[in-house]
Length: 52
Image (tube, rainbow, N blue to C red; front, side, top):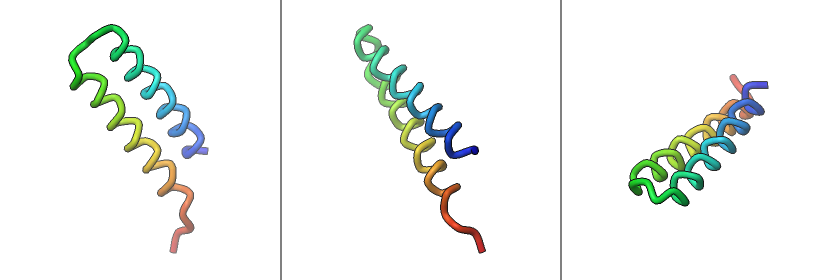
């Protein structure tokens, strides 16, 4: 369940990064959105791994 929520959050963050890029905001803002999206996807993947 959490992995689906995190994937949705990653999609929203990627959309925000694209939006800020199109608005000609500072580059670090859109890059930080992309980094947060990548971290959310990584967390979603790690939650799908089998535990001990």
